[in-house]
Length: 87
Image 1 (cartoon, rainbow, N blue to C red):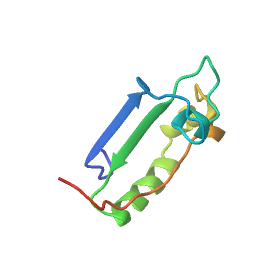
Image 2 (spheres, rainbow, N blue to C red):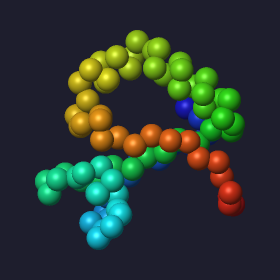
Image 3 (cartoon, rainbow, N blue to C red):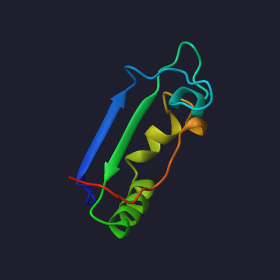
Image 4 (spheres, helix red, strand yellow):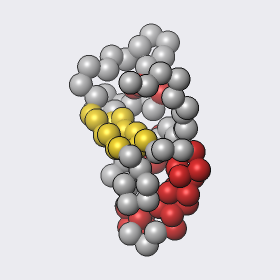
């Protein structure tokens, strides 16, 4: 929020079945003893998002978190989305 985000949500899987073809657990290769975490950040524009992401990655406060993550960062999924329906 410090660099322009308008909202942030982080949630733990509560009812996320392992699908036959696709699913959140399949997408991240979740093991039986693991749980999927889903989060997103909203920004007023792509430009604000891009600037915020750059600032986050350069911020000294992020270094300890990046070096000692409590999960396998290689299985994270990143992306940007443009809203098509919003209320």
